[in-house]
Image (cartoon, rainbow over all chains, first blue to last red; front, top):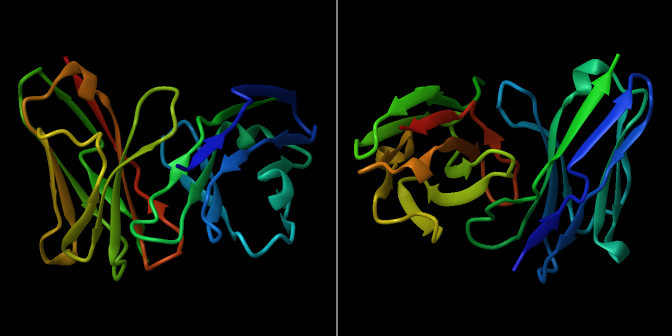
Length: 115
Length: 113
């Protein structure tokens, strides 16, 4: 069975601080995909990044960066110089490579950036 | 491309009533998914369509739930004889094919009184 764990339920930081959201996953698949989604108060899930299991290169997109480590089954997300607009619930998700490829989500981390 | 749209955005109903939600995926996306999200939790998979065929259903999808995707375009999710435990956000997502990103709609928030 697949499982995603986001141990941090809530994080609160002051604007301009860096913050890292942790994600640990479990799967028996050799090929799989990892995702991060952002859910602002409006409720819509906004796609941020997709990573396949063969690509362990870290990725940077503006203030966002992702660290994928297969050895520790982790896919962590860092926001540099956080801004109030980054406040949201962030979900890490995993899908396999067969069948429906349904997403298995973690419980989410509620991030609050205080001015 | 316009994104995934869902209708209605909010629905309040009384226990025992039937409700139907609609999802319009991104055009040309052949895969369509329904998820349910309760307060403080991540979304949970309900069912999946590839074109018009419903290929997988979660055990969460009781007999009171039915989903269709006629002609492989929009999809409907119907809940019969609603219960208070059905109160949740119902999310629809679509993707272009295997291994590709699922894009989500704004969701339908259901409250059963």
